Image 1 (cartoon, rainbow, N blue to C red):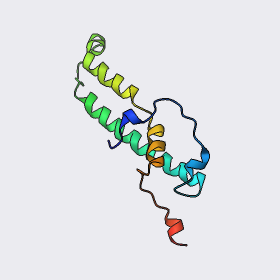
Image 2: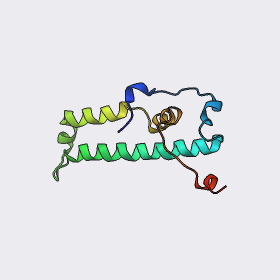
Image 3: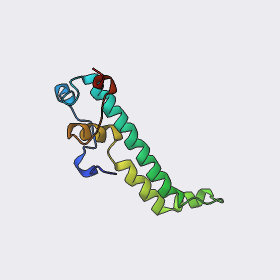
Image 4: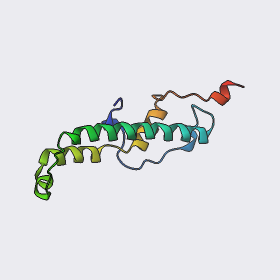
Amino acid sequence: MSHNPSTVPNTTVTRDLRDLDTGTDNIYESIVVMSKRANQIAVDIKEELSGKLAEFATSSDNLEEVFENREQIEISKHYERLPKPSLVAVDDFLHDKVYFRNPAKEQE
């Protein structure tokens, strides 16, 4: 992924709404852009995690094996500690790391 998780806060951040419409001049359009970016990030993270956890999949998992696999647990914990996709999307948007366009505005 292209973001640096250490620079994105992991908790709720109070934002000035006036900062969110700088790229679009419309707060609602900005929210749509950030929402779509958050969905992209979430899909990427899910695919990455699924790929890593697929390495541990066996056809004969039993309860003891699931609880004893420390490496799998550490991978899962790593992904749980990552910032939420919505926080990364807001950070990307505010730092002009998101490319977006509005075809409706281009026709005007």
